[in-house]
Structures are given as structure tokens and as C-alpha cells.
Image (tube, rainbow, N blue to C red; front, side, top):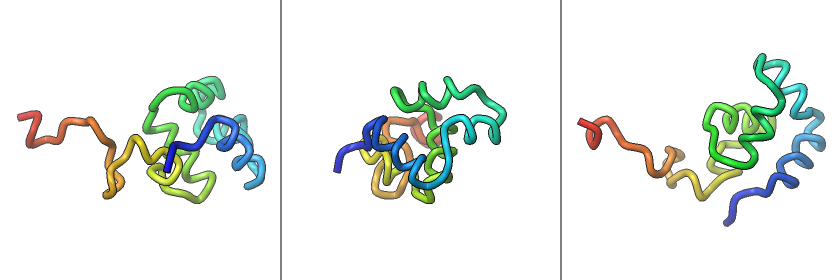
Length: 81
């Protein structure tokens, strides 16, 4: 299953009764930070978006997460040592 598109995420947010501006205001960040996260990976904002939609980040961006729900391509503590 591919990642959701920017348009799908924005539509889902509107359908759930919220907006990028509302999420940004609650998190005290710029709405442009959230729009940027729709273009490239930004885990903190991905969590905000997924919480607003009642989903897990790996449901929205399956290409970025493994089956356990952890980010792909990140060094684990064991590998980094």
C-alpha cells in the first residue's frame, strides 16, 4: 500500500473536522512546518497528523515504517554503538 498523498491527508483532516492550522495552533508550531511534513519525512509532525486522524503513522506513510511501526532507515542503539 503506498503512502497517502498530500491531498488525501488534507481531505482526511477536513473530513475529521480539523485543519492544518488547528493542528499547528495546538502544537504551537507554524502551519508551514506541517505543510513541509506533507512533502518530506518529519516524525514529530507525522505523529500530530496521525493523532488528528485517529490513525498510526505507519497507516498513512507505510513506506517510512516497518511492520512494527518503527521508522525505517534509522540506526538502532545497538547498531550505532
